[in-house]
Length: 138
Image (cartoon, rainbow, N blue to C red):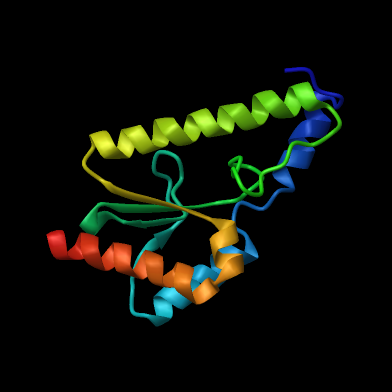
């Protein structure tokens, strides 16, 4: 992957990217108020945004840019070769993570950030319904 920045500069830039967004905090607060108990950003494979081991539930809130949303994902105009490889690898990793959890018998939900921006309460309800459905299987 060709990069315009030195390894040290790229590392510094990538470390500045927050692993937990304000949107994720709002979502988890809304779920907590509804009575759901979970862990955030656990050190599990793929680092799920929300996990409930008791019900084998993992939830990923995918950003439109980093996870190549078919509706809102965009490709930077500069350094295209680098970004194409970077974002394609993210997409491949998402598939690997999905397959890992499915093979282990976990319930996995991926939801796009734009779903929360369009209708926050409806998107939170999608997660709530998913968790309730998984907990009733137990």
